[in-house]
Length: 202
Image 1 (cartoon, rainbow, N blue to C red):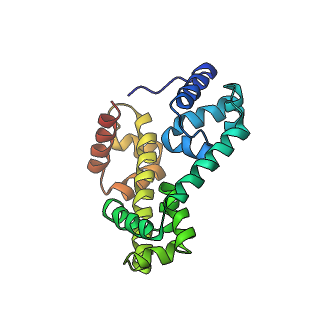
Image 2: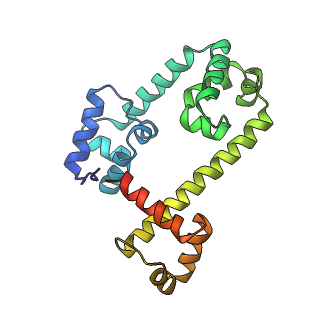
C-alpha cells in the first residue's frame, strides 16, 4: 500500500472529513484512528491544535466536546457493566494491565476508577489474579518490543538492496550484523523475515 504524500491541503481535507463524520477530533482519539494524520499535522503545522485552527475549527471547543463525550461514556457505566466488560476484554486481549488498557480502552479504565475505585480492584472483582495480570502484561510488552526492534532492524537491512549478502553486511556493518543474528537466530531467518516484511508491504 502506497504511503500518502501529505500536503497542508490534504491534512485540512482529512480533518474536515473526520469532522463531518462526527469523529472526536481530540489529539488522542485521532492518533488512535489515524496516527499518520496526526504525525503529518504536527510536521506541517507544528502541533495538532494549529492544524485544527487551519481547518477552521476551534481547538478549545474540540477539547471541550471530547471531554463531554468521555463524560457521557462514563455515565453509561455501572459497577456490574465494568466487571462484565473486563471479562469480555479478557477473552479478546492478551494484556489486562493498567498501562495497556488505559491506552486501548480508556473509557473502561476511567469507569473502573469511578465505580470500583481502581483498575486493580475492578480486575480482581472480575475474578482475575492481578499479580498474574501484571506478569502477563509484562510479557506482552516484551513481545511487542521484540516485534518493534525486529521491524527496525529489517528496515535498516532493506537499504542494503534487493538481496542483501551476509558477507557484505558483516563487512560493512559488523555490529549491525551481530544484532540481526542475535535477534533472528540465523541469517536464513533474517532473509525469511525480510521477504515476509516486503510481501506484507506490497
